[in-house]
Image (cartoon, rainbow, N blue to C red; front, side, top):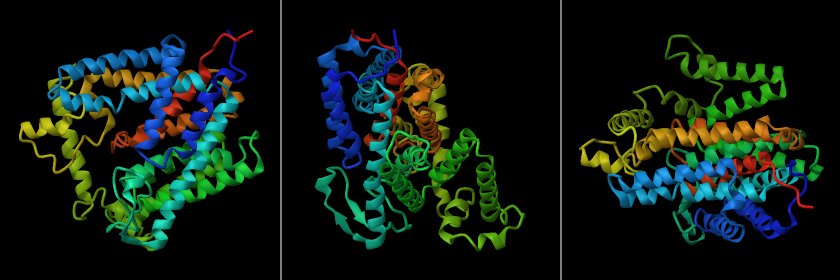
Length: 424
């Protein structure tokens, strides 16, 4: 058994297919998942389960069986069956990706295509900001799911190609560390032109991330910057981020807690200050989103305590609340991925999800292949961790393109870290 060092020529069709998906993944949340599903099925049918049954993929299989079991005994099995679509197809997507992406060269190129595709999100978001005519609606037929206004929302936020501002923000949040790694020259195997394009993607992505108005993503972007600074051992940069974070915190929250900071606050955009302050200030209108989340989490914990083992069925949260007369204040789900899995399929499913994700990352980081990827394995791990952190405050995994991005990354890590017999 040797580490993969060359691409398998027999997978050229699948590899080219996967590259095209990576390049155009952001265009549609209907068509691109469809093409990704076709590829996953093609790999499964043509190659067979045994070919892709790595230990990690076998764990996905057993988790799938558990989720199917909890669906059969769910509060509403029909709704729970629909909830399976948010997990099972993506488990297969990760498994098929781990079979296709076998070398550091493929891994780096695939990630670069994802970074380039993010330019479409950012450019369209900036175009929305420039036009700023929210009454103009981008043709729905392009996305086949929801209308896209060509301008800022009433609360001055941009959503780009996605159905919600937070979805745009989290997608970009996962891409930006990778773009940064390319842009600062850490990957020597790419051309100067590719590095310039990555820099453009980074700059545009940061601009649109700010314009989404996602407080969750803003905070995690700073955390991601800190993690990268620590990994690069850039202590001056780390100190700068630390001072920036302390300064923003003092300017936004200092006055509320009697610590001053008014002069520094005057230097920050008022809209930015208000978005952050409303997180903890009940007197501000946006605090309702915080209060509603706390209300939903309280009910979710109550449901988990009642059915800790089998759960209530995926996507059954709102239905159970209605049957019990509990007011979710308009929230359609738990706004927390971990609570959603535990409520839907029980604590065993949550532990399984966390174990598989952690195992995949740990296995990739511990292998010698990390050097051949020019440290990109660690950067992808940081992107996944940032996504998981975002899941404490929101539930964006139901957006297909974000799910695809997550399990593509996990599939690539598993494929890179799994040895295979070299053909002679």
